[in-house]
Length: 221
Length: 221
Image (cartoon, rainbow over all chains, first blue to last red; front, side, top):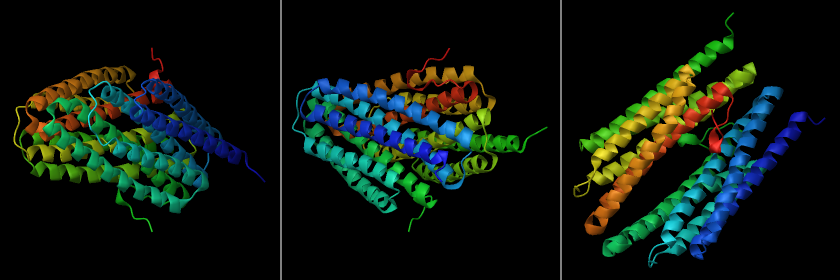
């Protein structure tokens, strides 16, 4: 027999997937804005972030309602606590795309520099895969794929370090480009942070479906 | 008659206060390390962050236990959900003090620059007040003070912008100091983010004690 809570949990999962879709869209728009020098796309990023914020409040309220009315325990409770956390991470990811839009707008307003935008593009692609992948694992309860996400985060970190090093070398030889170089560094750092939130989600998936806490160096295996 | 859950909620509040104390200590140590050029203090920051991470997992588990065994509703439920969120914010604050320690260590390893460290010191003081203040409001349920925290965040943001502008001007005239300038910018940004987490806590307090959601521009008044 299907329990009322099962339907509610399925609806919650759908809301989280929808919200994740908004994050992916916002990330791809903000990256396209920078790469194609199309500032009009930044406004779309802000519009999407508003929707993500609305989603955030709605998901929180639904979780509160289920907790108050159903008093879930065991797996159901773990799932709802994970949704509350994932919800926060998705909302912060939306913030990161907005942060990127600010640095991106600054960057496009300056004298173009010979920069490794291809690294920024690659970072955005990886971060996008991580967002999608982490939510796929969440919905399917795929713990093996969650572990893959944790590995992708390492690649993102290396690329961030590369952007940072390259930008600093450029800034030292071209002091006039200090602002533009800093914009790129901040964009790369925000992309890295966006990936960190996807990593948090992967860790929450592992917790929700195994009860194992892999945060803070907790072992998984 | 006192309910069992009342004692548990009081214990939770004490755990959160203790954790907040660790964050304050970590922040003041990392700032002292930079200002007094004492790298040995960075190790203490890392040791404190380990404790914060342990606190984080413990608080989460206590919340889960109360949710599973007591099935709290209304105010009690709102309080526990707030604790889960505050717990996350405190853990992220610990991360920020560690991030500051990395940039601080880099900074101290370079040729000293004539920099506005007084602004960084002021930022750290404000962020510290915000951490302490936000937890005081949480424990006392003082919504008025929570509103003060939101205002202090504006001062922190202005100072961050000042550090950023001053550092960029310095870097343009002294390209050899690009790395040191960037270290300062990253320290200022991490202090600002630490303050953002205190702001989140203040918003959670307002939510826990009034049921009003002031996140994402929700009105309070």
